[in-house]
Amino acid sequence: MISRLSRRVLKRLGPAQRRYRLGEITIELPSGHQLVEFQAAHPLYDRFLPFLAAGIPAGRWLIDVGGNVGDTAVAVVQRSQCSILTVEADAHFFRILQRNLARLPPAMQQRIRPVRAFIGTGEIVGTVRTNGQTGAVDPASPPDAALEQLSIDALIERCAIAGEQIAVLKSDVDGFDYDVQLSARGLLREHDPLLFWENQFASPQQEARYEAWYAQLTELGYSRYWIFDNFGNPMAEDVDLQTVLALNRYVRRQNEGLATRTVHYVDILCSRPDSAPQAQAAVAAFLTL
Image (tube, rainbow, N blue to C red; front, top):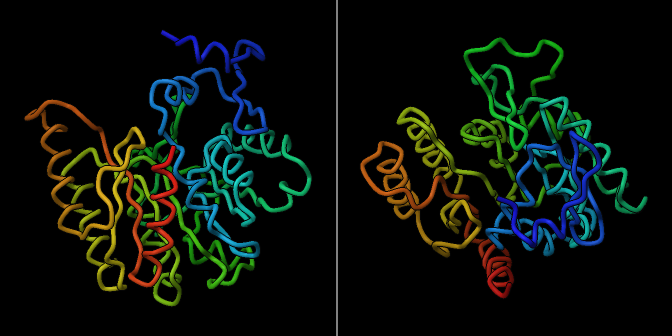
């Protein structure tokens, strides 16, 4: 059931589309997209990234992998002077993303570069399937031969963006974020971006892949974590890896039906010690909402 608040912010464009206002911009959403309802029911849902981006100066970049219909890019560009590289694999979502970016003032449009590509190490391949709200990789299906597959390292080289210009690497690809983040190993060895990802897993095998990724993060000097539940509410601030592993076990027990469901996954912000003050300042500002 759609709440009164949702009815106020929702306007019909036709049988397959709807509108939603983000800041000063009204964007288009597919008919099955639930951002309206989710943000009406959960006030902090998907609202942190603009606070993180607010601290990024002009001339530096936020990489947004899993750009969906452009809602994140539209929200971020209104609160930050940074540039945004937003990447989406699904053709339908990418077309809507392009239309939504076209709704921005020209000066904001100039700071966003949309790319349609499949991002990862190359180990995970398949068809991206969507449900109207989000897209996920189906590894059992053959990949789209027309869709370019790139690592983060190759993507920024292709786009002629210097590694030192990358301030934040964000990913939201429904269960395969570890593979997106792993594809940035060259960037992370040489530079110090903040990392923000959706830490979702549906099987012990996926959980193990995330744990292997955490081990590499530790080797790269990333040791500080901020954790949000899937409704956007901060759960733990400036904690170590053991807290992340404990929360993974907490979610796994729910996935296996051994405990009452409270959350479905967590989102994670991660930094090296030198960039921890920037991460903490963003979380502190977010908590003033």
